[in-house]
Image: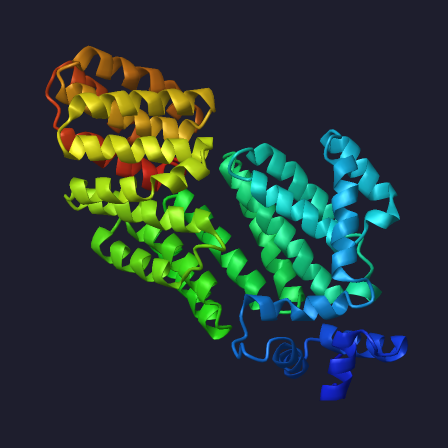
Length: 436
């Protein structure tokens, strides 16, 4: 989109914000903001937030707010809420049919509402999130470029593909997740260059790399997102990225990871996003325990128990059970560790979390072996083996699993062998054998 050759005056922007600018002038300035004029965006920001000099996450959305000046943001959001009450009970194909054939649903407010619902669903019900991400994309593709701007619509589409990739990742459709990421990357290159959207893309890409075991690459890529967050002075986003990075680095260098998570916790707005604080505290407790301080980890867990109660879903129930089991194992309370790991295995079986199930099974088998229950340990390893075979993983991992099972049978196994296999599985499970 071509940039116009003028800058809006302070008085024009003031009238625009007050809603008193004539329609023709308002549209001219909106189109100018759509062209990506940072100077005018900064002027808008200074008038709306005179005591907030930073160009933070709110400021990055000012351009969008101006695009929607003709169709008030609040109005669009209210209309979207009303429309969602009708759309939500419908099956996915019914929702998609309505979106395709009702032009009144082709608004940014509708897109935002659907994408927000997709993001809320992504951890608890990723299949629903996949459907909703497709629905948000269908709305974005039908937005009027004259009203919203062609480049900004590319940003919207990219955000929908980012969400789609994240949801596909969580249902283990890694090929689909990668395709969605590549599409998002292309759309961002055609968009406005919004650093917020770029940060979101890098963050989800890092999660994808982490799941595939590329821990070092994932951690390094997050440095780019952290630099972007600093550039736009978004401290909360910067803190979020440090916490995400800590979760990756923790598998490699737990001491450095603790430094990262503490830095992240010092930057985030805990009232704005308590789930993010919970993630940071959880990582801190987990790493503290790994470094040999289970009592300190237990103290962190006890202090922030109220946050775990606030987010009582499958994802967090699993993480909490895993942490409690690891603390018990570190304290050599093997019976308590066994009970927690049993509950964890059952939870992941019930919800078909196969990768997490494999890792939990290794933990349970290790504790059972330490308690002398060799037969049950071997039976658990045998039960999980067919699942690994369906993944078409490298034959070396399958051999290592069988060797561990044989060593358990013969009662010649070291506890470290379970941890070593778990790390190998985490890093290499998606690296297929050549020719298979």
